[in-house]
Length: 221
Image (cartoon, rainbow, N blue to C red):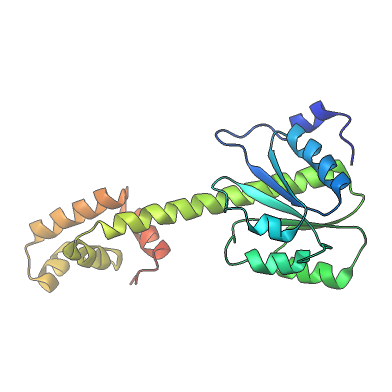
């Protein structure tokens, strides 16, 4: 790893608006940790370093884009076991494995479990930086999806029972007059409920509302 040209590294990874993305590093080799700390800092990301998997697991889940650069050979819990341990708790955190030697069976296992990259030491700085940049972008998209889904769930919970009924029928393609007949209410009342549903869900169109229902896993059609 070469950190003699920090300006070149910075140009490859421009700062992200808001809180800096976090690059977690778990490696029991202090020289590797120190080198990666410099490289990650020069790239204007936030490094957080850990000597063991257990130390990493004690940290709270981050609320900013993040990824994990993980040594496969660790003294307590090895890298593959750590990957399994965080799979359900932190599914939005991409993992980049690093190892001191090639190991095809473990590489295959790591990639099948969702690792985004598997690098053998010594590796080129640019290769690692590109892998980290891609992993952080994937993490950002996952967090955006999670935040969007959280908003949708909150908005859907704010609907009244009648509005839930109307929304279900609207996304199923029912016409206002048919909804009115089914619910034994006037068509004007259906339109009023429909308008409230659109406002509360912040849906700009029927297509938006259908997409929202699909994300919420509501019956459609």
